[in-house]
Image 1: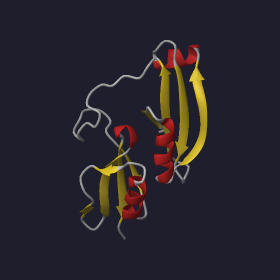
Image 2: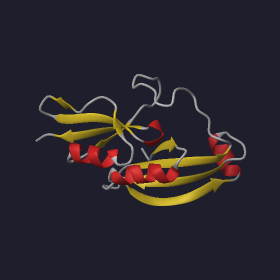
Image 3: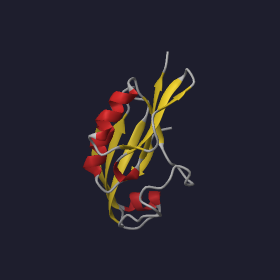
Length: 141
């Protein structure tokens, strides 16, 4: 997998959120032109993107803010977890409580609660900017 793409309204807030999660900003660019139109199947594409990289360098998230065509909503702003389609990206963390506290400073809220999966993991989902659901997993022993 090369990356996961997420369309956002507030690119700077999304960058700050994923930076707090431990990701690094790899770069920013504006995307437009015939090649972009042909790739995504839209006309008149103009968007700003930011590529975020995981600390180990093996994963990336591409954040995109569309200026044209205007972004559209497809349903409720904060859909429940069982909504069809891609619903979350999960990250391994060393200290789940610390990460949740830091993400709350960026507007994140727990979707459910912090739970323990046997003797293997502590897990939770948080909803960040744009309603993005991020899973956090702290491996135990």
